[in-house]
Image (tube, rainbow, N blue to C red; front, side, top):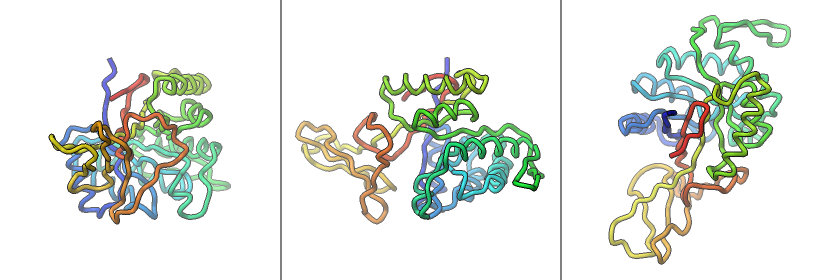
Length: 288
């Protein structure tokens, strides 16, 4: 039976000392890993955070969730990943996507699927200690441990999911969690794996599930909005007259509303958003 693991994707928008304390609390709470958002103008540096987390935790799987091929050149990315893995051997992986906030905050478009294919292939080769070509120059990561560091691809569209199945060690899926969507996604992933000479069972599959967090006091009157007294990027949940969640609004540390990407399907576990619960499984469906 596949063991379902649960990791949290944590935005690095709070001060680094507080962020490190949060990561330690996540480990103490029994989660399996932490992914750190890589968005250079919104978050503290992902790999500085991961390095500190590596030496201040003992069990958590640590990874950027997600990085991209353009704000970090693939050679820089390989160096950063290898360095964190030296601090936490066997507890590091990398998830790479086309870039969203990391792209539009600097006025550029996300990476193409062709760029994703090239970056993943080059990154895997560098981490394996192989020489690769950079234009007319050949280079290798001089201190590559050659220890296997999984390289996963974040994907939500059919073509991206198939590419992940073909070229990556696994996939992080941001598609919702409706049964019909899940079945369709697994079909695309299996097709990509087939093109890469592999099977679905060979891949690590991570379902990015947006889960609501609601603090409810027994006996609270209907219609009252409940909030956790402290914390970062917690959803606000307003209750309707039946006591059910009516809407979920996200606030940043300054009290401004946060908005989700409209590209993500609307199949949700609940009304709340943004505390991402990542459920990795090995070649099988993983669920909360």
